[in-house]
Length: 310
Image (cartoon, rainbow, N blue to C red; front, side, top):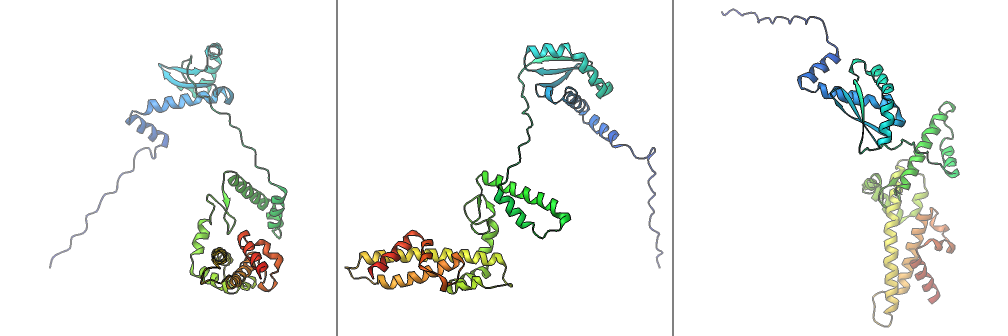
């Protein structure tokens, strides 16, 4: 019987002397190893110039190089170069105070091409209209008093963002009203439009528009809204097709035609009633002759012409 050998033990590593090294020491070793320490140091010194002269003068000067311990500062013209040369002892003292032994030993000002930094001007917040403020207050009704200031600021920020997008050319989604870059339903609504439940409700609304006025707690509101949009689009195409067929049938009355303008006009009237009920959100039985002014002009004209002909 073979005798098992004990597993080889691995000796623990001895802890490093001196404990952990600071991150700054590690960074310095990495920079020196890759010959980057000089460039990194110079960049740090050049950046200090902007802090020393202040924002106003930093816009008209640019520290561009450290040459043999001398900081080369580019200025706009000879007048500026003379001015800074006379004041260079002041800036040298500030650089020494900021950088210590890393400060340059002298300053030299040269005229040259200079990219002047644009003044940082904070844009004024967009002003909301009275109606937009009123809408925000309506949304905040019932909010807890302790959350009201924060909720109002958030609502105003969203309203200003929406106003800014509108000025950039964004248009409201014809279904949900959210701003989108193209004059068509937004991405979210396009997905909802293709859902089977949305198409099911489209058929129900076309058969009986009064379903839209009933309380449907089990059906999401966005589904009903998209179903209404699909139904109106479908009925609009039907109205256009029927109106065209009636006009063509009237023109061909002296010739044999399968279309009877009177029969088509009856069907057009029924489709128009359904279209108005869904668009206006009123029961079909309450549609009046006055409501026909909301129909597309071509459809309204065809219906009026047929009534006159009768």
